[in-house]
Image (cartoon, rainbow, N blue to C red; front, side, top):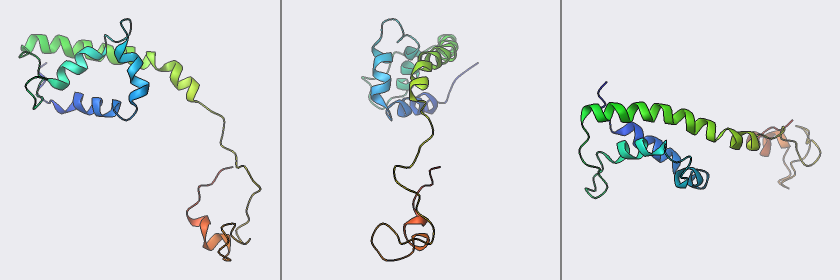
Length: 125
């Protein structure tokens, strides 16, 4: 196995940047942060900033890193299992009474709801 595409781990790291607070605890953890190491090494392997690049990685070492990366993704998935359970909520419910399609729009435009805000409003049941 020989890995030549430097974009994949950097894409993963860009995904992490979407929710940095969620990942900070994992990345900084002595106990759980280990699975992030191969991702970070491979991400910075071709970094434009020479200070960020690790020493050149031999093909056999790259294979080891990739195997660690694959196993690490499973650990990361398990680490966030409790977070996913906390994020699970019941169904969304509207706060006020249901607005009929032919009722006046509550925005005050004087138009029927179906011709005004109904076209852009999400539906909650």
